[in-house]
Length: 306
Ligand SMILES: [Zn+2]
Ligand SMILES: [Zn+2]
Image 1 (tube, rainbow, N blue to C red):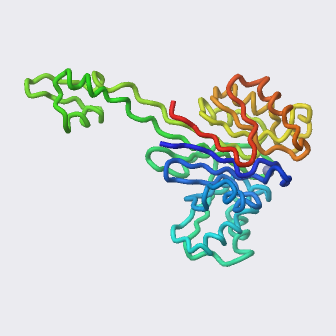
Image 2: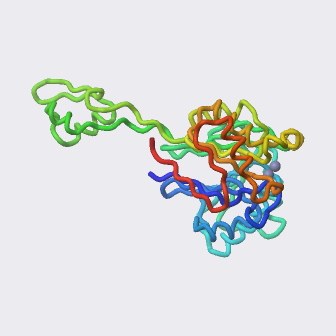
Image 3: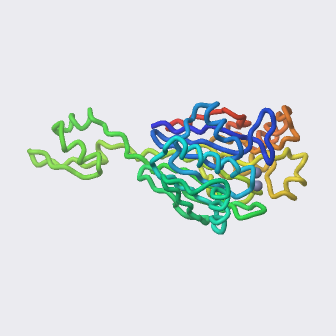
């Protein structure tokens, strides 16, 4: 089961020659999602080969650098005769703005477009094996962060040991794997814990969107396999981060460390750093022992099973 994220835009506020504004493409097996859709997201999808077909768009907040790509994408889907509906999730109180943004430049498309308002602490999409849930963030406007979290998978089935115990190959194998004891023809009972290992933890990818560093993100990113965090400024520009309700790279590192995240990706990089982003990475690495990535447009990160 593949789980990967592709950074389509990693710049904060304004695009630069090297970086487009925010958008993150997430693929899990056959499912694909977009988290934010800054201006030019369509071209980034082409450039980095993610394809246009996403099942849902999750907006962290309605600032231009996160949503201006949405109307164009909606029109392209119509132009491409999209037939499957698309769900758009946006913070509570911003649904109207999102609908207006889309309809200001064209009609509501035929394929069906549902805008859902979401608050923190909700499971907004449930696909059985995994879910997307929201958590609180703090920015200058209504905002939420999103976590895609897989449920634990069943433990490994020890086929060899099951055969040694005399379980006949067949339906009794799946009975045991499902967690039920089975009785053999000689009356022996084999219990699932004899042949099934511990449940295997699922993977979690967390996307903050724009936010100040807050404890709610630490809780949401607990043990996350990948935390994608606002890192608009270096620690030297911490005052600017406070004023604009963003995080520094060091803040992101501290959050990742407190959460026990495995990997941290810094994104939403201010244009003021140009090609000189080493400082940001160093700030985060000072605070976080895990792997730190300074995201760039086109970067794809695979999130392997543990
Ligand atoms: Zn932004
Ligand atoms: Zn913002």
